Image 1 (cartoon, one colour):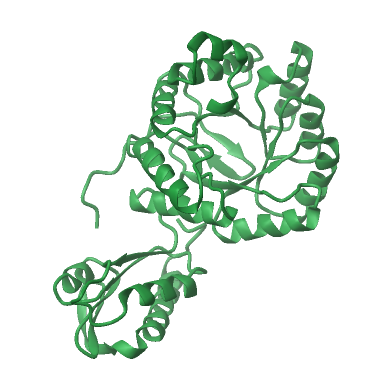
Image 2 (cartoon, rainbow, N blue to C red; image 1 turned 90 degrees about the vertical axis):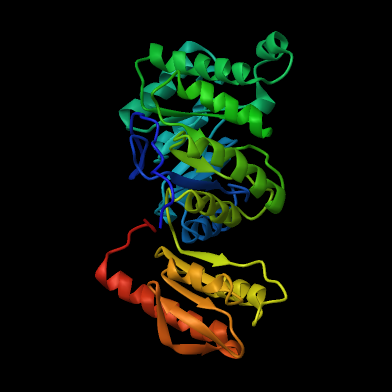
Length: 370
């Protein structure tokens, strides 16, 4: 049930990272980044697979050395999700990972030296149809821009980005996306707003170095939510000092809350109060843990009393409204004759949710949680 017109997405060109479309109205892609040592191939592959299971569309891998580039080759052979190779300064690493099948190069052209080196990387990307991500960060602005502006500002971030864009324009390479990340929410948001008016390429969103699992999720939700609600953004990463899998979960939660993209179960749950007739918090936590494997979009309301329970259940795919000993049970907005025993709610709801998902999956093919 929508209570507002659909968000009007910013018009952009489209690129492909592997088989994942980015921009021009394509679903907003969610990505994360490995934090294992890339040279530890087994650990990195395991983490990529965990990130993929969480629903990520893309995974970024840091490639700081030639040894890491050789490891990247082995990693690429063992995974089937598109990989973005993160490279700084050394153009030879970019050439090597392009040869080894990188699906995207995260590299700032202006940071890799002489013109012939930049051209070599761009030519390698062009020959293999590999897009480039220009990634500007408020914490690593060029020295002259730091001196010009005195501190990171939206204009400084955008000027840095446009320097790199101009290089690619000069080399007639348009297969790129851009990010202008900062750890300050307003700095990042204003920079993206400025940049969105200056280029037509896709934008990769992020509040960089956002913080720990809780504070970083809040900052990311506010910053990315502001931009996404304005139609700005084609792919995103939530940067947390936490397990990368949590980044993916928060990313999808942000998109889900804005009704941009749904994956898995959207639980509508009350914070609980003295009116609750069962343990709402424990029930919801248990269901979230048990049903993490579900990718089919589904709205499930879990409300502990009859004050708000029926109303929420009426607009949910499935819902319960707490009552003494047995709670009211709703499916597709209709109250069912049966009532569910409060002492066995988790088991009962899990079974019914899985049955409904199976029914939906048989009726409508579901791909990538769309």
